[in-house]
Image (cartoon, rainbow, N blue to C red; front, side, top):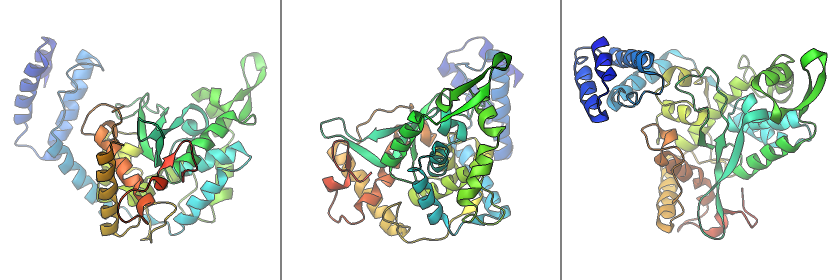
Length: 382
């Protein structure tokens, strides 16, 4: 390992570094796959220590995809075997109640609704986050995604390499995207979305939530227990005993519902959780921490998500994906760059749009009707 890092210190080209890395990986061939992946992590740690966190060689020194997939599969199987996933039979009522909260005159309740329906952290919802509609076309008569938004402003929690702080990425929503964007806008504009905080020399100032630093937010929300007190009043009667009603709880439930409705059969569960929660697909530990719930089999909801009959869902998904490609509605720029991680590739955006737009087609047999797309200038469905 030290010899490899010394070779990188000499400044080889990326092609030369790739050849050196291939030799290093071949030296791990006699070890178990999980051990190989651990060694890769150690190599990367040594590279960062010697050459810096932004070393040009870090993208070279990565584990092969097949290794990662094998380890992920084993980890997911272990989680499924050992973890007792808690069923949430009243998930539909939780979603509907959260949608009702979006219309509340109380900005705290609006934010709680957004936490449930978007899976974002409290700091992201109330202060630093932003959402935008996803435009499906570049021509006249703007058409927008109905069940997906672009999210920016992920809170930097531990400063880990697996975080997407500073990036924008597409996420599915458990309510129509139009409702989500409008609620975010009202929350930011609400005059009552503010708290009194003591600043220097005992001076008390009223600070808008949208203008708060992370420390301000902690003092205004966490230290005062605002969400701990308010969230149970809305959802304690709907959640299973012992599940809790914290923001972390609903972030986990959001990921499970989004996976069941939009991604099952298309992505691995870990990859999807990582993508929509803002982690990298290789950040296994963090993603597994959110695998807590199971939602019962459910009939098609029409107004919320996809029919769970696999054949019907896949037919709808393929139909809209093919049709949008045909008419050029998916010619959108890749805002994340290419990569194997679904959240940072244009393929992820296209796949997510394909599955999140499928509900609009449930009553449409031959193809896409214009009335099923949400146009910015007219009475869209989203």
